[in-house]
Amino acid sequence: MIQYLLPLLVTATSVTAQERLTMQEAIARTLKKNYDLQIAQVAVQQAERNNTPGNAGFSPTVSAGIQASQSRNNVQSDLANGTEQNNPNAVNSSLNPSVTMSWTLFDGGRMFLVKKQLNELEALATTQLKAQIQATVSRTIQTYAQVTLQQKRLIAIDTALHLALERVKLAELKYKTGAGAKVDYLQAMVDYKARQDDSLTYLATFAQACDSLSLLMGNNDGKLYRVDDSLRINTALKPTDAERLADVNLSLATFRQSAHLSQTAADIARTFALPTLTFNGAYAYSRNTSATGFALFSQIYGANGTFNLSVPVFAGGNIRRQAKVASLQALRDELLYDRQNTIIGRQYRTAWRNYSLAIAAYRIARENLDLAAENVTIQSARFKVGAGTTLEMREAENGLVQAIIRLYTAEFNVKVNETQVLELENKLVTAAP
Image (cartoon, rainbow, N blue to C red):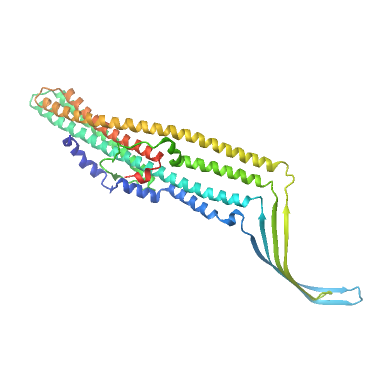
């Protein structure tokens, strides 16, 4: 069969010689520059920055401020003691710096629950990033496999071009020597032109697949890639224990963590019905001067503090309502997790079923290709000696081309289903070739 594949090996290489790209390189570029991954990484960084004791309410709030004023007035006044004050340039000044602190000492345990919530939010963002990595690598492998498939389909079409051209030459020779009819030569030319048109169609599909791969890698350059000549497929995968799938699947992990977050939010909502004890303290300094009046100068400084106990008595039923709504949200998220667990289980069974069928189809396609190649060899020999017809030769050629395409497609299907199985098992990043 090699003699039928050699012509397009040269053609495909020249078409896609702009850049050589292996699957490992495509995955590495995706992990580095993919926009979805960068967005997920920023979300993790946000969750990390938010997860602090101060954001949970453990730390006091301290602020410093200063107020200063000065006035200049023309003062004329008669005082009660009979004296008069006349000052056309009376200056009054005031300086009041202070440091204040507010510290919540007890809020029904809310600050501990909020810190727990922040921990869970950070863990959820991390899990979502891992799930995004798995999903993105999965799409990259499947898209790379699609590019490989289209590149190999070009090889199949060029094989058909080579076979059609050989038939054109032979039919022309037989027609000119009187050993064959002109209609055979014309039919061979029609088939050859049709193969040329097929080649252009597959080239456009190949370019589109390259664009999809570039997008995943964070590029917008419109390059054509020369990818691997074959896909590394694994036909010996073993299914994970169904009971362990819930522990390893990242999609289920995000739903489970979301359910825990909702339960924590419900616990937080219930704390608003409990008393709150707050300590407020301040250290203040006050200095006032006056050019008129009884007190020409005064200065006060010192610390003060107060404890404030607040007990919610009635808020129109809003506290109870908010707690009930939060509890219902927790129940809803728990149901969503149970539903997702069922969906993932079905997806896993389907993925394994498709993987097994793809392997069976791949093995059949390999056997069929050998038969089709042998048939072309026999029909070509018969056509040269005049024992075979143009129709028989054409059917043999079509059978070989379709057998090649079926083999490439079967290999692609095995790779896609293998990738989907590994993604569901959270093994894709370490298992990626």
